[in-house]
Length: 171
Image (cartoon, rainbow, N blue to C red; front, top):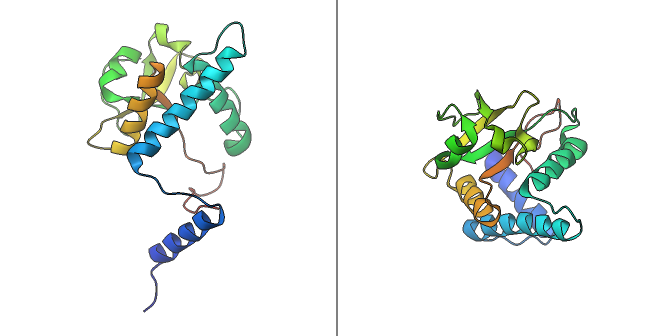
């Protein structure tokens, strides 16, 4: 029997997991843990400064890190926001669904300083609204991050380097 490309890719992923001693976790646990780590990183940075950090600072630092380490693109370019669909109208206008990141919406003025990593200089963002029935994993992560920070928005980007294909291997 000849293994399919998908089976070979899965075998390579498993081999890489073993090499780095990775542990598989339930998806719900992983979403909560990621959101908690993000929120805890924010809290620790807050305690180290007089001004206090917010989720906006966390997202801004993540944007800078991803731009510097993965995307290699200009600092002024914001990332696209993934937002809980049921909270999108509170943050973006007009109130329209945008499940495929093809619409540019205005970021409401009161939110611009809270989500600068995804706000363009003209006050707009290329929004992806996320519903549980269409993307349960991302929805759960957004819900967990919102519960911990009060911000139902995360940076939405791929980890492919400019000019390279999408990442599909663990390397």
